[in-house]
Image (tube, rainbow, N blue to C red; front, side, top):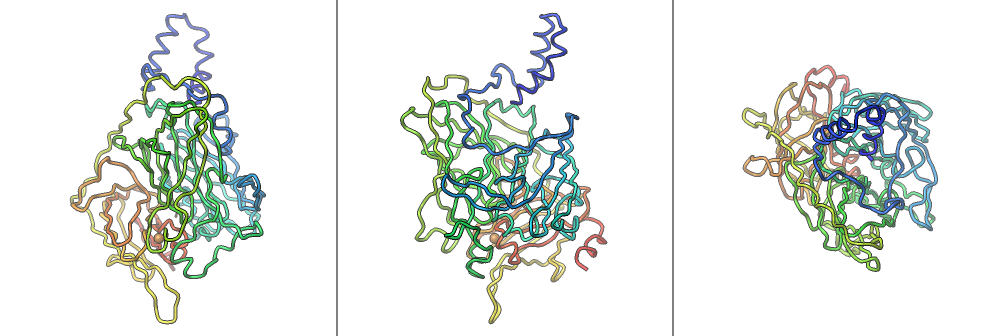
Length: 500
Ligand code: C2O
Ligand code: CU
C-alpha cells in the first residue's frame, strides 16, 4: 500500500524522464527507502484480510503531511458475531473505531464530537504530545459534554502503533467499545513486508438479553479482579477468517485494548517474530511461541503461518495467570480467528530481513530514584481498594515531581496478589533489570506489566513538555478504583490548577 503510494507520487515526474534516468532514480529511491532488492510486494491472495480488517479513517486534508479526520462518539448497533449484535459505544459507528494512519512527523487534526449520553474525552495512548492534547479531563481540557466538540491537533513524532480511548469513566467507556488504533508509519523502517494487518484485541460483556453489561457488575470484587468481557474480539468480531498464502510473511500490528484481559496469542506452533513494541521498532527481533500482551501494550510482529488448503490454523488466546482467581475453572483458550490457506504453491520469496534499530540506553547516573508500592488495602467496613504510594508522593494527590530534562529511575513494587500493567502518559521509558541494566533488546515502552509479588524498574527522561502527566494501571477497573497518580513535570502552577 505504502508502495503504491510512492509510485503514484512519482508517476508524473517519471513520465517525462529518459528511461535510463528513470531506472537510476528508481534505484536511488529504493536505496533511500532501505528496501534494496526485496521490494515489498503483496504475497497474499486478493482480499485476504477482508474478513478481519477494521474500518479506516478518511483523511480529508489534501496536504500530504496533514491527516485531518472527523471522529464521532455515538451509540450504534454493531455485529460482534454472526448471530450477535449489540448497541455499543462507538467511534464513527464501529468497534473498534477507525484505524487512523499517519506518517511519522505528520500533523494530526481530529475534529471530535460527542454524541454519547455521557461526557467523554479522547486520550492518545503513547503519543509524545503536548499536555493540552492528552485528553485527561480537568488537566488537559474540560470534559467534552454530550453534543459538544473538541479539536485535537498535534504532531506524531514517533513511528509505531498507538491507540486512542476515552479518559472519562474509562473502565465503562472502553468496556462499551470506545477504542481504536493510531498507526504511525515510517516509510524508511526497512521492514520490507507489504502485507500488514492492524489487530485491535478487546472484549465485551453482554447480559443474556444481548445488551451491554453494566460496568459495575460484580461490585468491589469485580473491581479487585478486573472485569473481563464475555466476548473476546479481534477487530470487533468474535470470530474472523483470513485467507493467506502458505508461508508468506505478514506483519501484524497488535494492540491490547481490553480493559482488563491479558492476551497470550498462539498460532498453533507457528512463531511470532517480534520486531517492535509500544514505541516502535526494538533493538533486534525476538521469536516467541506465544505472544503476551497486557492491557495497553502493543507488539509489531512478523508471522508466516503455513499449511495446506484443507488444514486451517487457529489464532487463539490462551489464559494468562495474572493473579489469584484469573485462570482457575476457566476454559483455557479463546479462538480469535481462523487462518485458511489459499490454494497454490507455498511462498518461495525471500525471508523477511532482520529488522534492527539503534537505541541508545538512557543513562541512569545521577537519576532520581522514585520508589512506588502498589497494594490492596481494606479499611474496616470498607470495600478493598488498590493503593499506590511512595515517599516522593505529595500526600493524597499522589503526585511525583520532575524537572524538565530530569531523568528518574522508577522502582515499582507490587505487593498485591494481582499483576498490574502500569502506563505512563506522554513519555517512553526503558525497562531495567534487577541490577539496573537496561533489558535487551532495548525498546521504548509506555506500558509495562508488573507481575504480582514482583518489582519492576524503568528509567524515564522527562523532556521539555511541562504538565501533569498521569500514570495508572491499564486494568481500567483498577485505575478507576484508585490505582493512578500524576507526574508533575516542571511548572508547579499546573499541578495546583489540577489538584486545587
Ligand atoms: Cu491508555 Cu491513561 O491511558
Ligand atoms: Cu491493576
